Length: 186
Ligand SMILES: Cc1cc2nc3c(=O)[nH]c(=O)nc-3n(C[C@H](O)[C@H](O)[C@H](O)COP(=O)(O)O)c2cc1C
Image 1 (cartoon, rainbow, N blue to C red):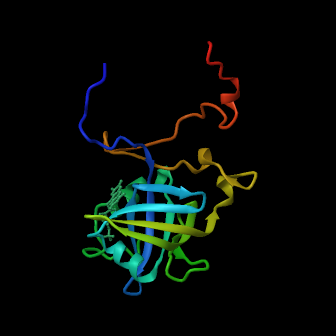
Image 2: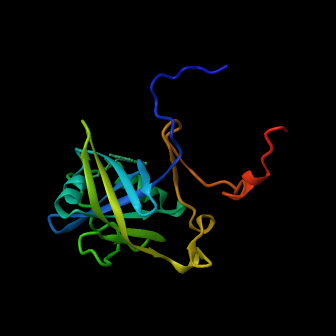
């Protein structure tokens, strides 16, 4: 039997990211878990309009998306609780820049992407940003055959129900493959 929970978004877990931008000439960062993939190179961000980071993204039309690993959980949580309006977060990370000079990427995150804003939708309380990945940078120790290996990266998964960060589990099966064995009659 199912219990109706009301209109509650149940689309968790989501990967926890740190979004970076430049505001008044300094990097600012926000922890953002409401991220999605619009198309293979397209990233969506759902960000409350009150955040300082939003101002930088709108002004520069660029942002970075970095993936903190489990060992960065305390710092990740901290920057998700304190606004750049109250605390200067620019010194918390060593940053580097790629092709875009207003998308500060976090050196301490093993995978990070610089993005160009291609679409901005104003929702009642939130900005929906759609970005196109311009460049992706990864530490060699999290790569397997030249691709990011999530088992090595150990990303932080975010769950709203438990309000906890979770780890990845084990792989279940190969995509575009295991379904070939499906038999509707079984
Ligand atoms: C785990 C976690 C996930 C978060 N995800 C989001 C999110 O998806 N969207 C959002 O608007 N804020 C999210 N936040 C809140 C922002 O990170 C937070 O308000 C931050 O202080 C904004 O900083 P800023 O004002 O310097 O931009 C999250 C916070 C935490 C701790």
